[in-house]
Structure formats: C-alpha cells, structure tokens
Length: 178
Image (cartoon, rainbow, N blue to C red; front, side, top):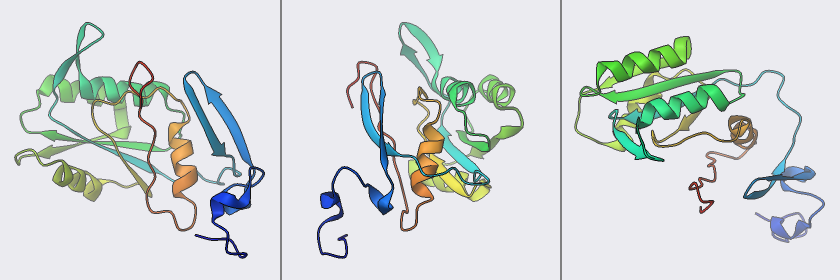
C-alpha cells in the first residue's frame, strides 16, 4: 500500500502509524513492540478461542502437565478481555477427567466439541469455528500459555481495522526466543 504521494506506508515516519494513528511504544520484559492505541470500542466484540486438542501431557519445567488444561487456565487466569468463549475441539480419546477439569475451569465460557476423526488440525479448527458464536475467531494451539493480560484486546484492535482479515501474536519460548 502507498500513501497519496505514492510513498510506501512504512515511509510515513515515526510520528504517524497505520491509519494515521499515533503509535505508543510499549515495553514488557524481553519484549519490545510498538502498538497503536485507538479508542476502545463501545462494546467489545465477542471472541471465540478455538483450541484443538487430544488432551496430551508433556513435561513442563519438570512437571507433567496436561497441555490444554494449562492453556485454558492461563486464558481464564491471565486474560482481561470481557467477552470470551473457549471452544475446545477434543479427540474422542481425550480422558473424561480432562474434559471435566476444562468445564470446571471455564464454566459457562467453555464449549467442548467431540472430534471423532484421525488427527487433522485444519479440520478440527473448522469444526470449532462452526460452533463458535464470536464475531472474531482466535485459533490457539493447546501448548500455548498466556502471559500478557491484554493480548486479546491487542489482537481485536488490529482485527477490527478495515481491510484486516487476520492477525497473529508473537510467540515466545521461555528463554525469550521467538
């Protein structure tokens, strides 16, 4: 995209960002980024988070954890966005104790979709999207742990902008690597 003078938008200079908004620098531990702060919407649009899972376990920091439980706990415990639906697309082989725990963590915000096919990430996402009710859909792996409270707000800020069809977050390893 180019501005009216034919210059690439990136060449507009540091005082104005996309859509003429003033950027605000933000710094968090081991993260440097520039993000825009448009006025918040009058009503935050509902967001559906779709998480495909098999209910698998993995060693994390010397502790054997069920990935999707840790993921949903971090969404519920860290996120500040007010209108979130969590759609978990679980294999039929996912242990019932895992599904019960997810229901207890997520309460009325959680929807469990049973998936009977062989593993197919795209198909599981599509099944989750079909039952989702949000205006925005966020696709998330079950091995993700939320560490930034306003992550959904930031993504919705960009995905609500005209002409934007998809946005993504920066994923970091524990040691800060991207």
